[in-house]
Amino acid sequence: MDIQNATNTHTDAEITKNGPLLSVKGLTKIYGEFNENTLNLTGPIFNSNICPETGAIVACADISFDLFPGEVLGIVGESGSGKSTVVKLLYFDLEKTDGAAYLKSFQEGEANFLNISNQKKRYLRNHMMGMVYQNPKDGLNFNFSSGGNIAEKLLMAGNFHVGNIRERASGLLEQTEVPSQRMDENPGAFSGGMQQRVQIAKAIANNPPLIFLDEVTTGLDVSVQAKVLDMIRNLQQELGTAMVVVSHDLSVIRMLTDRTLVMKNGRIVEQGLTDQILQDPQHAYTQLLVSSML
Image 1 (cartoon, helix red, strand yellow):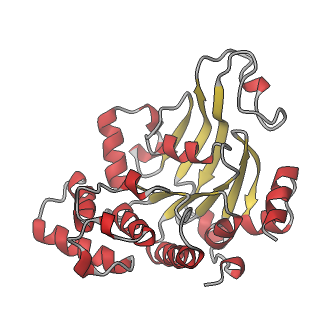
Image 2: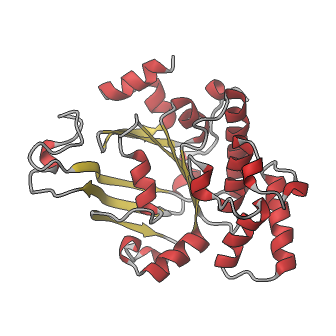
């Protein structure tokens, strides 16, 4: 698959017909002590995430967006832009400083799921969300076999029939292009690309409506990147799962996403349809990103 020339296939009508699956409002994460001026003294205008008065670090601030069923949303920016922080907040790996998020499939979309109990957060992660991390060691237990990692996700969602679990794990590995006969092998014996495939199999195990992918091709060889991205795109089209794809690489964003948010110094500086942003970027920072891939 030619990453540069790949295109997405979702239409506006297909994406928006059911209303938002995920709504994020004012999501903010600040590290350290901050004051009333911290947000006003940081961001792209100052080219800094660090508050000059308090030293607080604004990882992300006032992030708002909607994600629709079956849509793939990209978040792009350089290292330190806050893009990974956004998905880690939504997946409960980090605690927010401020903001709200609503999932249509959870309590009819009326509960800010960032404020729910830890028990309910575990339920949400195990039933309605999946995550694929940049480093497979963050998403896989290397003390378990590849099949065991998938079984863990199934067990956490209340599936206890050993035969069904093993059958499901085998099918998911085949679906993600990992030979099922390697199901009992430890993922530490796999290549980086195959470890990412096991992560993806684990993430989709319970058919969640929402999956986060955080720099999933970083560190992989170019040929392996293309195969992993092609597999993700095919799976997304087959399953119809909504995805949030975080990447510093606009080639990845171009291949996978329908819409894109561009982040710099913890803020969104531009957003819109991916094709429009790549063909006619408006913000100077986006223009720089686009020119770097030409």
